[in-house]
Length: 149
Image (cartoon, rainbow, N blue to C red):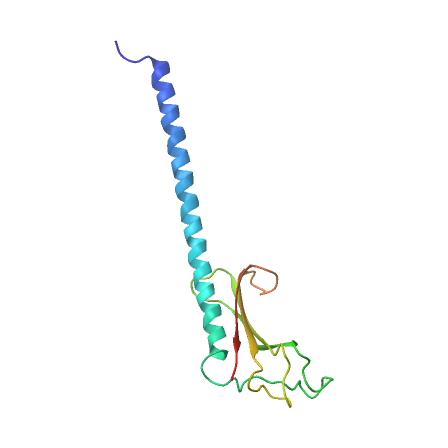
């Protein structure tokens, strides 16, 4: 008639184990959700930065000629240069955030300018979760496309 102390103890231990497992699973799901929200925010930021340069306007911002101090004076096909670079804090992303946009002319340029049929590759990189110095590595999101006349 009734339960023994051993049966009650075993039941409580099993309930405790199930409770701990369920709590740990819920914590993992919450952490994954936060990481996904951060990744999505960084992805939107990288895409927005890329679209500032690769849009429906002619890419007049692109410089096919290297700065005067460099040799040769015309960029080699595929050479990459930085169009935009910033390091700072962004709401919704942890740590410091490094934003960079690179451009290159994979097929070179005609007469020192980007021209019809000569696409420009635009690559936007957002790296977040960096230490306060902005150096090092964190989680990274990259978007790339081609801009053409």
